[in-house]
Length: 153
Image (cartoon, rainbow, N blue to C red):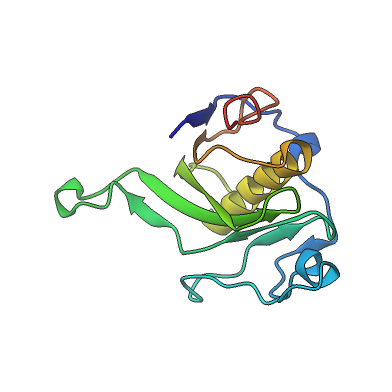
């Protein structure tokens, strides 16, 4: 497994993915391809976070944020793991990416921080068609423009 670590992103949102398809349960990408459009997740207890360009891919938060590491002796972990599922038209099946994040001490809620991560991953999918299997993201988002294209193949 290769990991890509984000160290710096612009603080303004040009790196974010802008689409009318956000936080949906029925995927426009799958519906357009004649596939089952209902998105599946492990946990329905956290709000839906999903992205699509409507034609080539979708990305969905598959589970609620979980402490990392998850061992009992790790007590108060300062990291969270996020599991996203994605599907891209260039590849057959559903793939996953695990994001390790340190929740920021900012005015943004955890939900909004995860939405920003989804935007970042969707922008990467739009550009590269694939993601690293494990990605680390630190707040504040200050990083280079690419997080996984060069490392994920």
